[in-house]
Image (cartoon, rainbow, N blue to C red; front, side, top):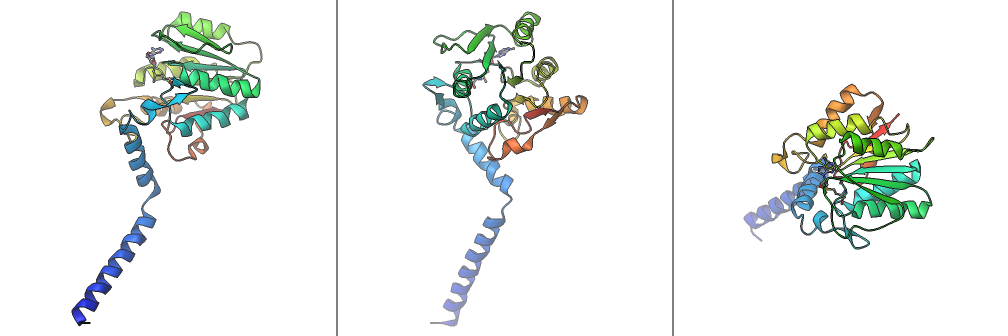
Length: 234
Ligand SMILES: C[S@@+](CC[C@H](N)C(=O)[O-])C[C@H]1O[C@@H](n2cnc3c(N)ncnc32)[C@H](O)[C@@H]1O
């Protein structure tokens, strides 16, 4: 074999080894972000095509599993969800409550949807999550000593989420959570053109409200639609 052929083969072998070396050391978050973008942009196949017991829910399955873990740990008596859509996420929460034999769900939406699942643990409220009348109805459904957990998944503009955090943050019991959904938009890392949204609201809220801290342990599956969004009340 000629000198040139040997040198070429060595060069290729070296290059392959270097590629493998750098691939293994590629920062983990870059890989996760790329997958996150792929998953998010294929909406019709992925999160836009996700059902719980036949009802559509706009959720990432990793987050639903995390919800199950949080519910098991916190054992809330009342879960308040803003943003019902078809009711798939409310039904998921009710199913976990059934398994635990504990908990009710109050879910709020400005729009009605036909065929939402009927379940004895779920109460549907029609109206805006920040409407004082709706807030009063939520407050009055909290019993003495109830543990309350809140999930914000309605209008994802920064201003609206900030208003919700100010209202519903007070209702959350210590040790429980307010979960702010879809903090991944506005380039964190998806939907760059969204404009200030949940992530910006979370950062501003946490600067002022010392009662809450981000629980990053809830992001252990790496892909979450709620980065920074699992806020635990101390
Ligand atoms: C992201 S979807 C909710 C998805 C649902 N939680 C799920 O996982 O399947 C957002 C919902 O919020 C509702 N919404 C928008 N603005 C709202 C507001 N101010 N108050 C309550 N709901 C609102 C919309 O009508 C829509 O159904």
